[in-house]
Each structure stands twice: as C-alpha cells, then as structure tokens.
Length: 287
Image (cartoon, rainbow, N blue to C red; front, side, top):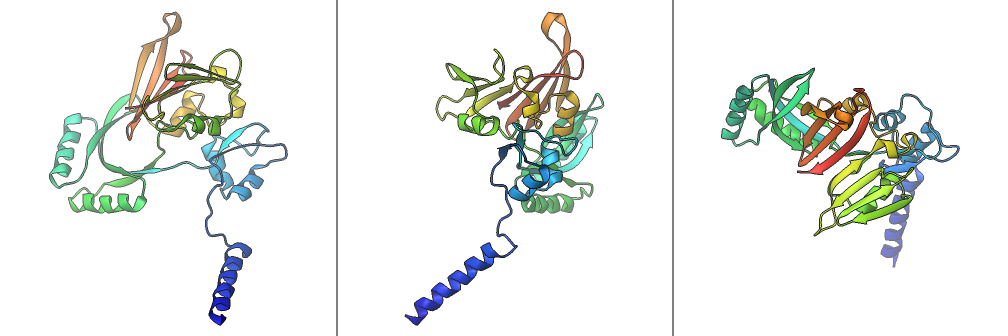
C-alpha cells in the first residue's frame, strides 16, 4: 500500500513540474493556420501559439506588425534540407559530378534553376526532412573530395500549407469554409468571393487525395490571405529562383510569364500577368 502511495506521489510531482512550471515540454503551434480575431496582436498570438513574431511575419509575408480580423495566418511550415554539391552553367559538367557520386553509392541528381535569366545546373545529393540525415550525407559527400558541398534549407512546395496528397478537409482547415462548392467529376471548385472559383482541386479517384491544387487570386480576398504570394516579387521571396522561367501566350494574344518549381514529386506553376507583377494563378501538381 505504501508503495502505491509513493508511486502516485511521484506522478503528481511530475505533473506539477511539467505543467505548473514556466517550462513546457513541447513548444509547438496548436494549429497550422488560425483566423485573426478582434483584439488579437502578433505578440499575443506569438505567446499563445509558441511561435516567434519574426517567424509569423516571415511565413505570412507581413511587412509590419499590423494584422486584421478575418486574416488567416500560417503558424508553421515543414522544411527540407537539400545537400548541394555544385552549380554549373554547362549541364554535362553537372552530370559528370552526378556520376561520380552515384559510383560511390550516394544518391544524386541535377536540378535546374533560372538565375537572372540564365540556367544553372545544380547537383543535389538528396533531400531530407531530418537535418541530421542531411548532415550525415554532407559528410559522405565531402569525404569524396567535394569540399564546397553545403546544406540548403528549403520550403516544401505548398500554398498556405496545402500541398498535393492533402484532402478537402485540409483545404477548408487552411482557407476556411467556402461560400459555395461545386463538383464536376473529380474536381471541386470553391467559391469565396464573387462569382468565380478562388480554388479548384482535383482529387485522386482511389484515395481522395489532392493531385492538382490551383489558386485564382482575383477570386479571393487578398487581405484575408497575406501568406499567399500574389505578386512575382513575393513568389521569388517565398520559393526562390524558379526551375524554369518562360514566356507564354495568354489572353488577348498578350505575352505572360510562367515560373515553374519542381521539388520532391511536386511541380508548382505560377502564371504572371503581362504587367510582369501580378499573379494570375498558382497551380500545384503531383508529378
């Protein structure tokens, strides 16, 4: 009986220590996306959800500390760690380096990036969710003599936290419940403002997961979604240099621009209007 009392006493002390002290066991956000309410401040949301003010501003492209009721703010976002081993202007040179890495038993591939209008061929020796795994790969790459190798932290392709492989419920959790939803075959159209669909999502017939996810800024209240890059400048700030940058024909025979990003089995296409600034749509597609 004494042993039982002793056991419960220890358990009570442990509970008091974890929950009663100023130190919390897990400082993680309670929600990925929250809706700003009247009286909310960035500082208050930072304390409540255990995310720094600086991080909230970064995730949501906020220029200052001002937020408004109705805004949906992203509070967390996954990261990937890519091991990079070189950048070349000649693709053949990049492929030669890939062959050397593969001969040593390491994964490697060439990824392209358009920087200031020029194509660069980057050698990537893997992408990892766990930084420790990336660091182990980096050591292996450097042992082969590639001393300039480094780890590049990147954001997985997503739009306000939604990515391919997610569900319809994930869309509503991040963007809010639409005023109207229509369905045609495997594609849902979500209406948030006016007569146009602000979001369309095409789902896999077998598992119901998103295969194509498209955002149309003209039919969304932009002030409600500060984390969505609605300008070319914001797109480059969030996603960096595109894999492909090309001129395409758009409405009224005008010339528009498309930026494409490829990462971990997904491709993001961003159509920029003929003014060179405004985003017409963002489309995330499973490869």
